[in-house]
Length: 210
Image (cartoon, rainbow, N blue to C red):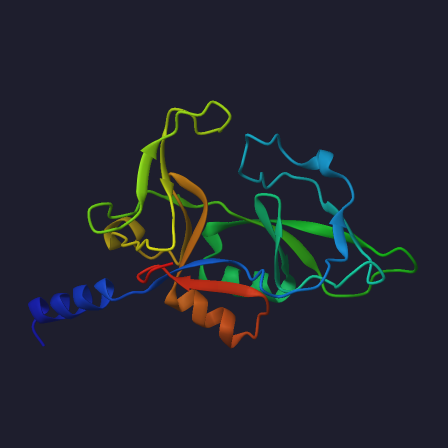
């Protein structure tokens, strides 16, 4: 096959890469029986990224108060993840994340379960093809928001997102610029999570209506 044909096939495959919004699956019910014991270790609210220098996060797991954590749970702006979730993330895209160990305590006795980590998706990419996407784009004029005066994206159920492959490159996961809470992953990371049997992770195809 000629170099031109190889490049054409590679370009065609790249265009077909699927992307998903990713996060905890809140459809899984049950009262959570875990919480951070000391929130003062976290950076100020306006500093959304989690420093790698953050002290070990003190967590209490109490099964008498509710269910234990699954493989991925929400923790403020970040995720509480299991050891096996961390292994998948590190294998696929280690540069995308910051991991901080959790020191787990139980009310009675000594915790002898698997390790847990606080995880921040630290990579932020301005990769949205705005001309091909369908969503609301505005300038934040409410001073109560930390992105006051800046561009923002707002999503609804009729939206569709299209990303520029040249801006994503080899990345498998990233936060969206102008929509910090939106975490996007590709098909390869989604498949790796499924293959590892990770539980309570939600994926939504952004090429379709939300």
